[in-house]
Length: 369
Image (cartoon, rainbow, N blue to C red; front, top):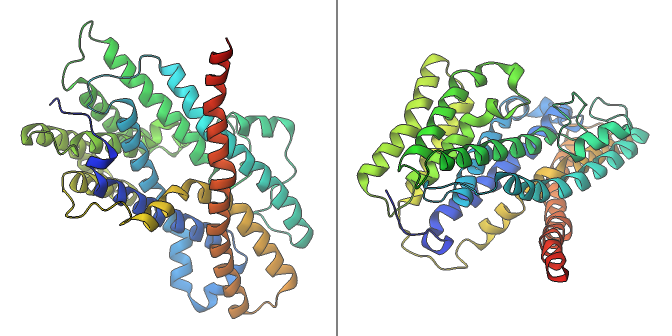
C-alpha cells in the first residue's frame, strides 16, 4: 500500500483531465443559470426548447464534477498516501476558509451591486433585495444557508458546502490518525472514508432536508477522495482492487436502492480520474495542455462572478434591446462570453492577489515576532 510521494509532474494526464472537467463544468453551470433565471433565455426557448429546458433542469448536475474533484484534491493535499491526516485540523480548516471566503465575499459585493443596477432596468425574481448586515455577515462566514438567509448570488451554496466538506474530511482524517498511538493502520483512512461515503449515499443524500449540510454531499466528495488513493500508479494491483471496491460498492449499492443520475455521474467521474491516474501519457510536454490548464484554473472565478455579469446583461437586454428571439439569444451568448472574460479578470485581479496577500501576511508577522 505504501508508495512514493506523488507530484504533478508524475501525473500530468490526470491533472489535464481535472482541468478539462472543471472547465466544462464551469461552462455548464453558467449556461444552466442563464437558462434557469432568464429572461433572455425565455426567448431562446421559443427556438430551442429542448436545449434550454435541458440546461435549466439537468445541466446543474455538473456540480457533481466539482464535488468529486474537490474530494480528490483534498485527499491529495491532506493525506496523499492515506496513511495519516492533518496534525492540526483547525489550522487546516482555517487555511481553507481564507482561500475560499475572501474572493467569495468580493463576488457577493459584486452581486449586490449588480442586483441594484439590474433593479433599475427590470423586475425579476433573480434580483435580490438590498441585504441586511446580518445577511452580509452570514455570507462572510459562509453560514448563509445554515442560518436560513437568502443567497445573494447563484451558486453561493456550493462555496459554503465546500468548506463544510473540507472541514469534515479534515476531522475524519485527523481522528483516524489519532486512533493509533504509533502508525495509522494501512486501510483505516480509506475504510472510514468509504463508510462515511456510504452513509451519505444511503441515508443523508436521500433526504433533501440535509442539503444545506455537508453529509448530503459527502458521498460524491468521498468518491473523489477514494479515487485519488486508487489512482496512484505506484500502488500494487491488489491494493488498487481493494480501494476500487471501497469506492464502487457504496455507490452501486446506493444506485440500486434509489437511482440518482447525480450519483451515477459522480461515480463515473471518480472512475475516469482513477483510469487517467493509472495511465502514463505518451507525451508530457509542459505546453501541451496550456489552454485546458488555463480554463481549469479560472473555473472557480467564473463560478463566483458569472451571476452578476449575467444579471446585468439580462437586465440591459430586457430594458434596451428588442424583445426578439435572435436579439435575445445573442444576449445569452454575450452573457456567456462575458462570464468567461470576467472570470479570467477576477482570477488574475482578485483571487490570485488575495491568495498571495493572505499567504504572505502570516509569514511577515512571524518574521517580525
